[in-house]
Length: 96
Image 1 (cartoon, rainbow, N blue to C red):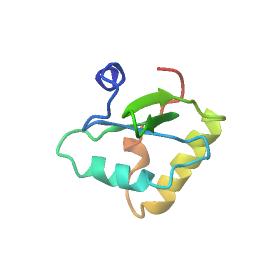
Image 2: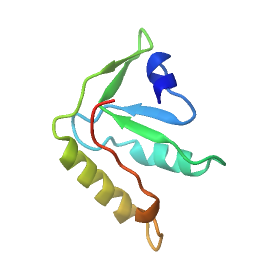
Image 3: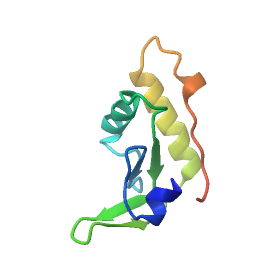
C-alpha cells in the first residue's frame, strides 16, 4: 500500500475508492478482480478519490468508518452464498 500512496497510483494489489456516500457502486468489480488474481488478493482503500484531469489521488476521508466497515462486510456477505468468506475477510479501519 505504501507503494501506491507514495507513487500516487493504484496498483494490481491496491485500489482507491471514494466512499463519502457509502459503499461505492463499483466495489464488486474490485472484489471479483482481486479474487481472480493468483496472488493473495488486494486492498481496497476507502476515502481516496482520483482527479481525472490530473490523474492524481486525494485523501478525502469517510464520514463514519465503523459504519462503512460494517455495511461493507454485510454487503459482501450478502452477495457471497455458501462461501467461507468471513474467515478470509480482513477489514481494517483507521488512518494509514
